[in-house]
Length: 98
Image (spheres, rainbow, N blue to C red):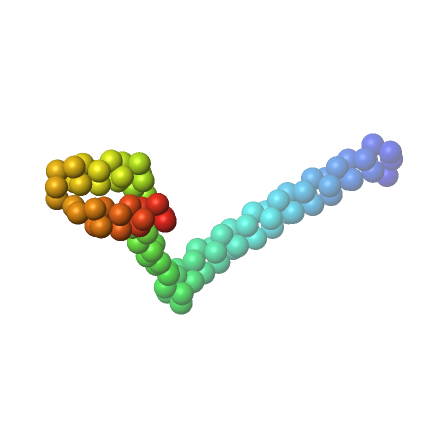
């Protein structure tokens, strides 16, 4: 066998090996894909999806009343004669203590 014959033989062997290798790779990829498709439904059957409910949002915090506004309203109630001096003083002390 000459140089060209050896090279031709090597090319045929290499080409055949490549073709066989590609065919094996495709076959394995097909098998793996089939296995994954079979396993996915089994996983869902074995483990039911867990559904969590989000906790209810906390109630909105009441806005802190403005002490100055409260004192103004108290003064108006006292001026209108609705509150006595003692009631006004007690409520004023509560507001200022906050």
